[in-house]
Image (tube, rainbow, N blue to C red; front, top):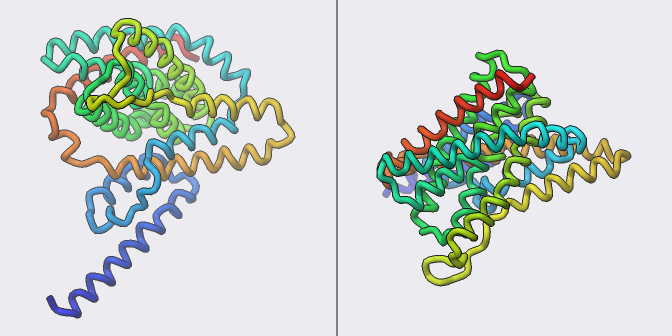
Length: 326
């Protein structure tokens, strides 16, 4: 190959690397929304010349959890307790609906029983964390875990784009949108992303209710262990780590620290701001994984099951939000 061509390609490669490294600067721009970060991630993820230069030292899932913890410094304990109490019955209704309907849809579509259960758990409670916990309790196959996570991952990405417009179309208040997102979106981190584009009050309400909802992982996992009585081991006999959402405990710890040390409010405000910006980069990393391979692995039945469950959950959540939340 001609030396000049090699030099030109090397020059372009260096330019691509600088471009990717500079991308996080965009997230510091005021009003740069989560949807933009997601679309940017999808674009970069589907351009190999750019995608290969994205740092892989930390995963989107980990970074999203860290951002939720930091945003705990912008919350206050009394409102969180009130939101948890008020939303208990609504949360119970949506979780029960998703689990029961998931079993029916899985059977109708002829989906593997274990896979259908994992998708139902991810839809009903808090996405990837619930799937990880349920997988540990049921000794789930690695392939089923991957497919379930892929389905939930895809729908979470869509939620970031469509939920804010739905809220504006229906003239939802900040409180209503927080409730709606917390009840209808799978992952806590995606609730944070959607609510952050709607407003600070929606962000606080949605995050508090969703984190309270995620605590349902505890009774769910205990119930699964009791029913299945399977050891938490992988297919090769090694012990599987339980997917407990520890970040929720740190989130609560951050809220408690705000209550105990009001003199540090200035520092807490900066940490909260940093969490919001970190969340944008995490959503950008999330977008990198959206490609055709995600929906071609095992056919479309698992996706149709996830979509069917989600549509019903959105409908139930909308009814609850518009009729019972001010």
